[in-house]
Length: 344
Ligand SMILES: NC(=O)c1ccc[n+]([C@@H]2O[C@H](COP(=O)([O-])OP(=O)(O)OC[C@H]3O[C@@H](n4cnc5c(N)ncnc54)[C@H](O)[C@@H]3O)[C@@H](O)[C@H]2O)c1
Image (tube, rainbow, N blue to C red; front, top):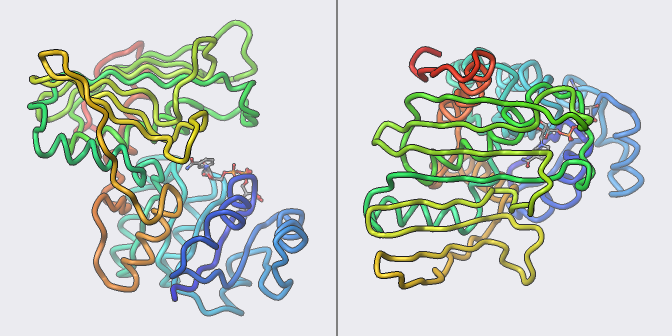
């Protein structure tokens, strides 16, 4: 069993403790940490966690617990100090997305993981779903030929989905689009070359910073991605992964994933349409562990076996996804000027 200390038990961290960690058989939670005593009380009263497994800091937990893994589900600003401390002390770490607050911090954590000889993984949970797995395979096999143009739409109406973080800087690009940027790299099996991006706000939103953006992203093998994202959309919402049309030389791959509005138990869809117009609904693989359970199971497997499973989002692997956050933010601050990824 991989023994895990979970640090960060806020809105999302509590959900990890309640709904995700107990579903991953090879992980045993051995300690729970949050700087806020209220968050600690909640895991004790609602999940029945024993008080001697609860701590207000990582230092206190480490002094009293043996563990292999730190699961860092704390707010993004705290990722760099807490993940850095855990790595320096010799723990493997699974950290929530976004990796850190800046690319420099992310690079620093990758270097510290390497120095400590420990596994650092970013929980890019959207990767661990049937549709992106299938589409990555179809693109790699050139099932419908080369991918020339990808159009992605992400639409949610934040006030209608219980959104809380109205003052967060770059709520679309830093917090949400990182999922879509990372999926682009995964399904295309390619890396970005340059980006141009514009963002804006609506006149009536509670957001302090820009919740809407459009970006053009050029990839090394020649694919161009047109990305449109909105947290303030009055139009029909999309699945959390967005709606993807992949325009290939021999037809189209259309897909979406993590659709919480879907009926039945498989919210992912992949459809193809070839040049003759013939459409097909593609059978999807069954994954043993989905979404966040998929990332946790992947790092536990890597710790136990020393081998990383396919689509493993190590810290090193995540740097280019995270670079797209910094590149789009920089471009948006310069009225959409092209930003070369190699310049970051
Ligand atoms: N993958 C996804 O789909 C997804 C969805 C939601 C949130 N997230 C990510 O999860 C993370 C947490 O989000 P949240 O909504 O739970 O935030 P939150 O603000 O509700 O909770 C953060 C918790 O971290 C604790 N904390 C902060 N600094 C600490 C420290 N130094 N030591 C111990 N505890 C500390 C706070 O007390 C708080 O309880 C963020 O990085 C966010 O981006 C990911």
